[in-house]
Picture 1 (cartoon, rainbow, N blue to C red):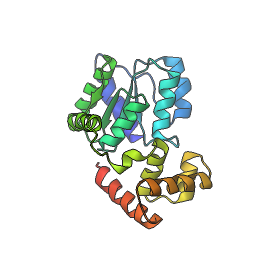
Picture 2: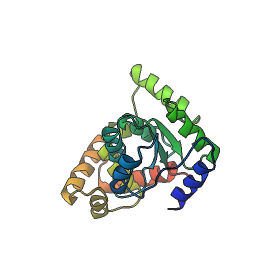
Picture 3: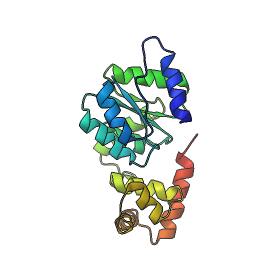
Picture 4: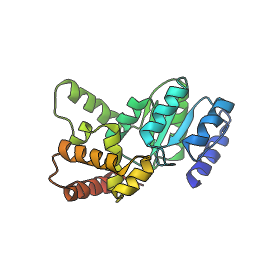
Length: 206
């Protein structure tokens, strides 16, 4: 709620921008978007029980002409790339100053892609590396769902917590964890947990 109220104040003080609605989760957001037909949407992928990538995909599928700007905790180009692939038009981190959020919003409203100046060059270099056959990070081998499970492990969640958060069965989450360990060459769950926690500490920058 604090983040949403802050964004409302930032947007409403601009002469060329007006907030037409806000929501705590995707369930209540979809009918509101249908009713008020906004020119753009800012989503925080850490809000609500819905998976971040699934939320983006749902919005872009239901409202294909709606530009989506992602607000995220993660200073990680891998996450930014996945959000863009899911259909987002922009990606900005929460630690950016308020005027940069307005810049990002106006950029996607103009029909362009927005990536922060820190992540942009890294993303370009990454795409170039892919085209030249340079080996990618082991995290890139994970599917979006596996990557989300990996993130939840890094936040200290157990299998039941992850299952509840993603509305999936414990058995399904165990299967995803087995795939993660295999793809990332971890010998056991402890190795996976330690790596995921370290990654989360490094990438979650406030």
